[in-house]
Length: 214
Image (cartoon, rainbow, N blue to C red; front, side, top):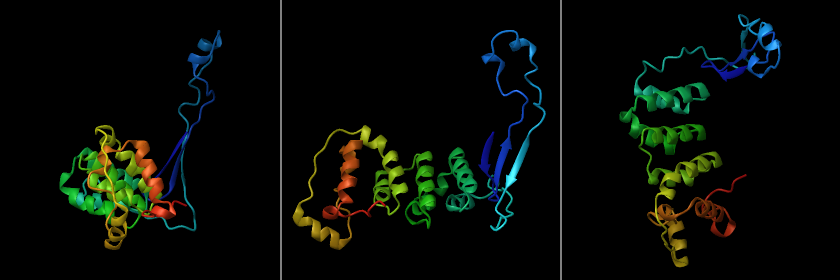
């Protein structure tokens, strides 16, 4: 039994069918060798389920022969199948020529899911940088920020402790300029818990630099 979204937007359900669900390895006694455990194995169904009120696109899957530009654009498709498949192909083929477009998408894609897939695709291309992650950590989307924290782990775990200070007298000027209050390279000396504490502080009224998570 399994299910997945198809390229057209419908839900596909694999219907398991067997007379006996148990596996003989977990059956004791004579029944283990006497019962025809495979009865019904030739049966089964695949259901295609869709909402009659919603539009189903009749696009044929064609990302494999498509250009890297088409695959990159599919990273922010409204259908999860196209996003997942585009990310997989870009990473499997190590399409580094797509890197500039995907970096731009990580900040500017219209949907949070598109920006999230762009981050993970860059990670799979070994092209993710602390600068890109710092931008993602200041995202409006809590989901994107959560994934950015997870993707930051390799830098947090591989650096030694470091202290840095932002003077209170600088905060007002920095806010007016629209610049981040995080000093250059600050993330390199933070443990995961310290990064979480910092993000929590930045969402408080007295340190509001990030949108409040609702």
